[in-house]
Length: 194
Image (cartoon, helix red, strand yellow):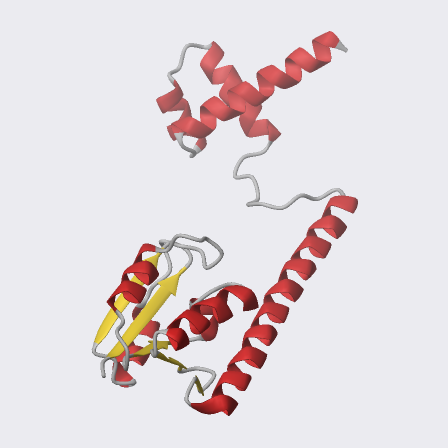
């Protein structure tokens, strides 16, 4: 019997350290991982390699149930596959395991709650974005430059100053200068047509 672990983070700027430490502390001998891979995607190279590696009698351990999948159906499908191959499953955070019928029942219930939590979060996010849009706001990062900076960028470019130098003067990237100039050109074209 081998303790095999699986860790996953959804974005490349997130860190696996917390999960890896917890898995090692739980006695896992080998860890497979995916970094920058959403749980909702069907192809997860680290998980696929992990599932290929597992043998009857092994136990797959994850830090948290949602690392295995994003919805109840996905999690339960993986656990069902493991069970059919006589591979155990354990989730550290929730304290779940597939030893015995009570463990399997609790796993099903926790997977359902994990999906409920995710669905509720998505619903709240959509409602918040809709409310913001109704009040004239939109999501995303706040703009780094205002209309005055955009006008200044256009004026400097019209005087023959390079986009690189304009970017240094205003304190933005060269790409931002080009985007500002394109936006002003579009706005001017719309005013001319109207």
